[in-house]
Image (cartoon, rainbow, N blue to C red):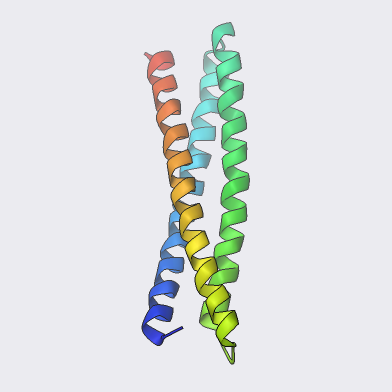
Length: 126
């Protein structure tokens, strides 16, 4: 892996780490809003939908935790390539691409859940 590619990959991973932190914060914010909504306005027609969002936020927590761990591991490999063989460097590069795809998928899933939750809030908070 050339130095320029290595620096680019490290920068990309650092950005992903920050993005994951931001998504985690937003997910926490959504859970707090949901808890407050349920504490103040419990309607029978909201319970099922509220449980759905609670489960989605918990699943998102799991996905964010797993991806944060993977990004951290990859960043360690990128920052410490040492005497890696050509095959090891290829594996690092391939894994970087897979992480990129996972980040794209996570963004899309989070965006969908956030959009659905915002619509739920609009419908139920008047």
